[in-house]
Length: 95
Image (tube, rainbow, N blue to C red; front, side, top):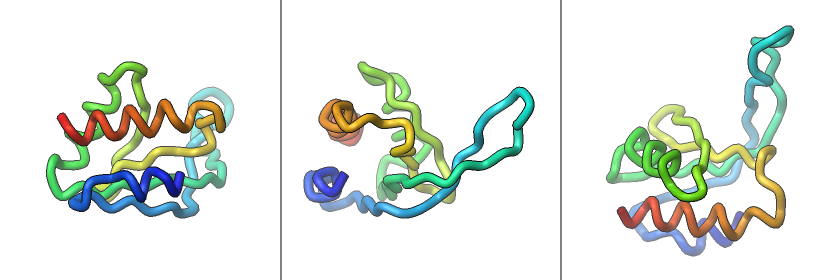
């Protein structure tokens, strides 16, 4: 995902860092798994707006917002999907 950092417009900052994500509901609703995320800090639009654009894109990109950053969980992205993800993010940032 270094390519993402290089190709983002100057007003956006992307960093790669360790984080955790929740497993989900069912028997382990509070269980967290370690993961790596790409954190995008937009200056404009707001993080919530960028997350919405990603969710409504084709294909939809599911992200989460934390402390005014959009987090892309790489645990859920296969290597062959990285180029598609990069293009979706670039499109969402241009809207």
